[in-house]
Amino acid sequence: MARVLHTSLVAPSPAGTALHERSLPLTYLDALWLHAPPVERVFFYADATGDQVLSNLKDSLSQALRAFYPLAGRLRLTPGTPNRYELHYQPGDGVAFAIAEYHHAGFDELATDDPTEVAKILPLVPALPAGGALLSLQATVLRGGLALGVTVHHAACDGVSSTHLLRTWAWAAAARAGESAPEQPVIDRTLIRDRQDLYDAFTAPPPRPPSGDDDGGKPLVGIVSPDVQQLLATFTLSKDLLQRIKDAVAREAERRGVPPPRSTSIVAAFGFVWHCHVRAKQAGGASQAADASSGGNRRAYLLFPADHRARLDPPVPDKYLGNCVGPCFVSAPGQEVAAAGAHGLFTACAAIADSIDVVVRGGPGYWDGVMERIIEVFSAAELPLTVAGSPRFRVYDVDFGFGRPVKVDVVSVARTGAVSVAEAHRGGGGGGGVEVGISLPAEGMERFRKCFADAMACLLSSARCD
Image (tube, rainbow, N blue to C red; front, side, top):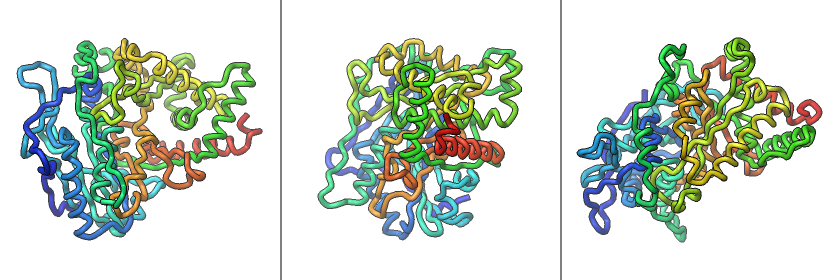
């Protein structure tokens, strides 16, 4: 475990007008994440050590929290209501900020793309303090660098908002001459129209599959704690590889005599990873046996977040502080997603493109029936593959004045079974690549690595892939 040297409560800076007690009600978009595990990230910075660095991080955090004061408050049940929740801030509230040291593994051992034991990384991310805390931070001194752990309650805000806070904090810490400050967050929950029906559905305890199903007692959410043998690894899809995926899918569409699906780097990246993930699970044997027993019609599911800021009526500002994302539902026959070569890639990418089109066309009406779709997906024989993060967050641009991070991991994927996505930080083929983080037990990781390598080899040899 990391040895915590000091923990302090960092309050928003008192500069200017004093902050008074305030409450910010949760919208139905926040309530969607009320029962979700917190998001845990760790940023690795090389050679960022010394008392001055740690002191500056603490002081600049206070400055950043001035604009993001709701995150210094607490999540609570609104007084006098049975199921209405709010972010409540009062003077004296603050964010727990721990200073720790860790000698069980060195910087180079942890800040790597190679499979690493999750147990070695978990001590670098702090738990949320009891009592409804929304944000917790930990700066851990390593041999050769610094790890900055960030834990956020998802009901408080989405990834767009949390990374907005991080960039604001980094700007305050770096104090770069001539560089404009990030825009202020927009703190106004009245911008989102109320949906009482969805709010009530999302705040209710997560449902389970119908009684009698052989579900092993699993709830309709992911893993609650990582397996002791769990590994975390990062895989990079370069710009060139993403283009090869798009080309292979387009050729397969032409061969089938159908219009090519939407062609973007996100569709290509998600399709490739989903294809590899399903292939790896089927290679494990259990999925194949279950699929055979169901007549070969077992479906595979993928869920990834879609930003609705520009799609709501009225649209919500880009810098809105809160949640404004919803699930994008994807499904296809598992055997077809796992099929070798361009066939499997086409099935995966076409299904993803279709689901994006549904979101784009749906507008505000997209939310009608969303709870039924959630229950359907999580009641399936196998939990869906879910996605955390986005290359749009630009997490590798979070520079506190001592250089960009060498590595950024979303550690909470070990708890949820999700895959994380971000812009590629190395080996990205000149930029434009995507990196994917995944956590699996050792045997599952080896199967996934093999499927990933085989699919890459297929794309590098068009004759083999087509």
